[in-house]
Amino acid sequence: MEKKKFYAIKEIATMLGVSKSLLYAMVNKRKLDAVRIGVRILIPEDALKKLLAA
Image (cartoon, rainbow, N blue to C red; front, side, top):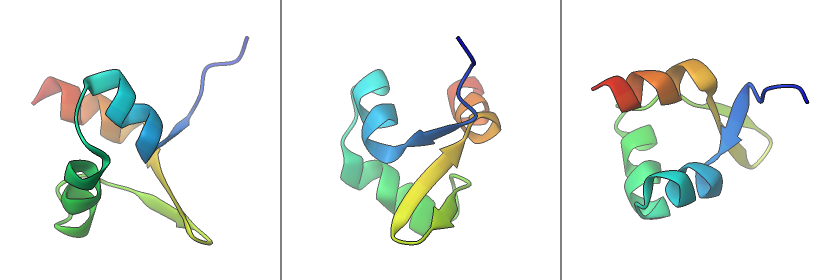
């Protein structure tokens, strides 16, 4: 199985046990890197690792 390179906000919220609105706020304040594809906001794996290391 190939490792994912991008995660949806909902996936990260479930993994970390935080609200989606907290993650959206972090993206809007540029505290969490994100990639927008159409209306979807995806979080790169590297950005997730940085968040977990902080």
